[in-house]
Every structure is written in structure tokens, then in C-alpha cells.
Image (cartoon, rainbow, N blue to C red; front, top):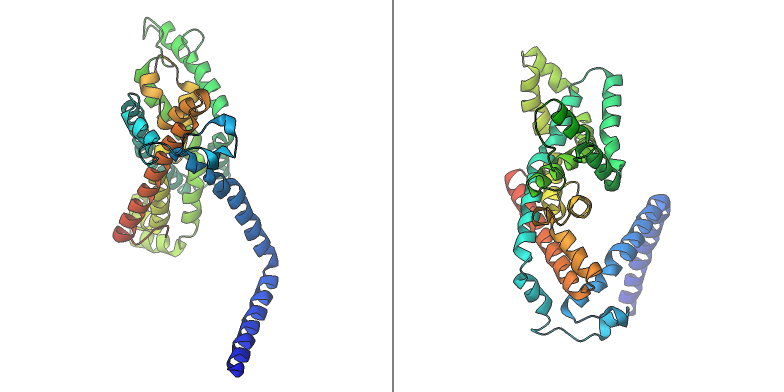
Length: 329
């Protein structure tokens, strides 16, 4: 019996010693991993304890303690979810969120791929670097600044676009681009593509950099055109990257796809006139939670949004693995 315990302890010590040696050999990498884990725990997982108030009648006056001391909501804690689905604004908000996000997915997802392919075909290295740098700079511009640019170009009094159209007798009266509900979705999609096009193309350009150039040389010898090379070599080679980005895009569909900009655009470009098209789920959560102080109700709406995103990630990942063999997990 004692011999068995000694053998187990000896094996454990050997494994522990071996593990510590590996850890110390990789101490700098492990440090980065530990810091990243701490960041996730503190800023991502710890705040998730607040999810519990979606099932309670929480009052802000009770503070943090109210997360645990507040009474459970009626209908087995589902009161706020039921109120959300019965809300008169919910169908409109969901319609706007889904339609706007789908439009962004349709236009914003393929745009960086096409741009990366076009940039990859540029043979002049200097021009390629300049175009690439200029294209991803808008990603770092705040949405507040973007809206300022949009206002400068499109407002009815001093907007450049309206002035050009009116002065050239193309239109008789300035167009209410920023107030009319008819233009909100188009403006949201265009600004999102402009802002994120270059940034997301970096991922695809990096994938293209790993393609064996001998494949292109062999294809040219066989008389293949550039389009043939793109179709038969470039696209199949970056298929894995495309599918991963697609999964991430569909997973963030409820927040605006690649750019995740639904709330910012709704908050900045939305107003009472175009509210019927600009109100999205993210703005609805902000309005009910921070403006109207209905924290439990807003948390229920946010949890509903997150659950849809989670389900979409799993569905897209499963379909991707079955059809292409690529997936996130």
C-alpha cells in the first residue's frame, strides 16, 4: 500500500517538475497569457454577474448588493422577457436590427475580400503600401468624427452634396439625407463599409501572403489569366480565412456585423424623424436602461441579443465545418 503511494507521489513530482521547467522556459509567453486571462476575468466574465438582474426586480438605489438581494421577478423570473416581447416597439426594433445587419453583411463582408484581391494584384510595392495604409486609417476614426463628416457633406443648408446638386439644377430642393427615414439604412451601410473596408482586408492580405507563388507561376505557364488564377488559386487558398471571418460576422449580426456599429450609428445619426428606421436593439437597450432607468428590462433585452448571437455562432460554425471543413472550434 505504501509502495503504491510512494510511486504515485514520485510520478506526480516528476510531472510537476517537468511542467515547471516548461513553464519557466516559456515564462515570457506565459506572462502574456496570464495577463490576458486576468483581463478577460476582470472585464468580461466578472461583469457577467450582472446578468442575474434580468430575472429580478432590480432598483439602482440598492447598488451592487441589489444584484443578490432584489426580489425575483414574477412569472418565474421571466417577467422582463415577457414585457420585452409584448412591447409595441420590439417588432420595429428587431426589424431594423435584422434588416440593417443583413444589409451590412451582404455589402461589408465581400467588400474587404474583393479589395484585398485587387490590392494583391498590384505589382508596384510603393503604391500597394500607400493604398493599404490609407484604406485602414478610417478604422481608427471615431464614429463621432465620421458623423461630423457625413453632416458636413449631406446637411441641407451647407452640405457639399446638396449644394452641388442644387447649383447644377439636378434637384430643385435639398434632400433631407439625415432626417428622412428612407436614407438611413443606405447611409449606415456606406459609412460602415468605408470605415472598415481597409481594416478587415488586412486579414485577407495576410492569408494571401502565405500562398505558394509557384502555383501562380505554374498557372501562367499553362496560359491561365489573372482572373483564372484568382478563381482557382487565390480564393481556394484563403477559404479557411473567409469562413472564419464569416462566422464572426454572422455571430455579431445583432450588433452590426464586422464593424459592430449599429448602436453608434443609431445613436449619432438617428433622430425623432427617422426613428422608425434608425432604432436598433442596441439603442433600445440604451434608451430603456440608461435613459429610463429600467435596468432589469434592459438587461433582459441585452441577454436576449447575446443569446441570439451565441446561437448564430454555433449554427454558422457547424454549417461551415460540414460544408468546407473549416470552423472556429
